[in-house]
Length: 109
Image (tube, rainbow, N blue to C red; front, side, top):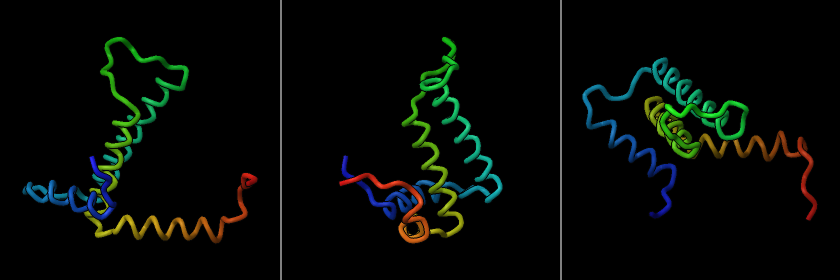
C-alpha cells in the first residue's frame, strides 16, 4: 500500500462522506465522536500497558485500530470546518521549532 499525503486522506474521507445525504455531523456531534474514540483508545492502552486486563468477553481491538478511528474522525472534523490539516500541522511544527525550541533537553549527537 502506498503512502498517502494528508491532502489525499482528507479528499478520500470527503469522497466517502459526500456519498451520504447526511454529510458531516455538526461540530458538537463531531467533538462528541472524537471524545468517544479517544476514550476507546484509552481503554485499549489501559488493557495493554495498564493494570486493567481485558475481560474474556470483550472484543479484541488494537491500539492501531483505535488510532485509525481517531484519525478518521479528526479528518471528518477538519473537513467539516474547511481546515487543511497539513497547514495546521505545519503551523504547530513551526510553533514547536520556534517558541518551544529550548523547552526540552536535546539528545547529544
